[in-house]
Length: 318
Image (cartoon, rainbow, N blue to C red; front, top):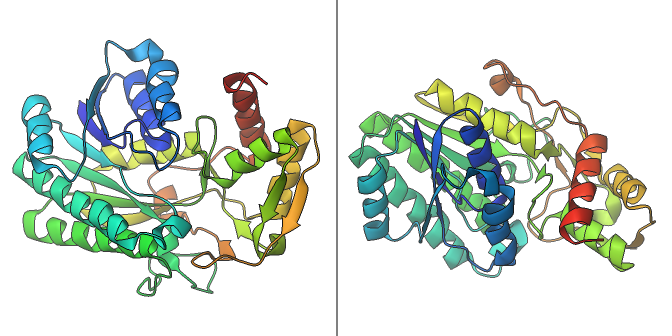
């Protein structure tokens, strides 16, 4: 089948495209290659990571807020399903430009929902975030928890997309599934994420900033587990739901750093810092809802970080 992936040159988008092609589907990628982080790695995901799939791959460069552009893509390609991953990402950056985050994440999602209704898409899968849980203190986070108190513009936009998806499912009977991602990591990851930044700094002998003085815990989720969860939900065509997708083990940030040090072969120089505005000390996922569909995470941080550091050495020729 044809599957439209927005943010297709992104970390999760490119990995999902590869998995779709491996099983015989045809992904149509949309990406605007913005400069939130170095667009060179986005270009390389297409040119290097997906180099063996050139004949199967279709890439459109454009903005999801541009309805004429979207209409042209949908008219030409007629995708059967949509995986909507394009967004302005990052909690802390959203505090600096909340209007941009609202415009891209909310208005861009509305444009895609409208197109999906117009062209009778069979399933609309979209990226939400563990950030929607805000300062909830009950752990693990469950999809049935109240998420009406986000603490960053980014989290608020992700909650808004969940509400919008519910509306379109209710009014237009468009099947929608929102995936609340929990700290995704792995090869070809985003340079602004902790694993990438810590690895770079440790190799360079630079000091890393450890926020909340290291008293943080996360369900780190390896990219292959994220992709398998996406495909599981893509194939189910659920009427309207949200799903947590995270690792099944709560990890301390200090342990995460120790594993990076082990595979880099150097100790990190650490500067202990207070928690940053908009950040939360713990994000732990209740993944029973997605498990019921037959999905389970399989990669521990020891193997996932080993794979990332090996990729980093090769990509940056260290």
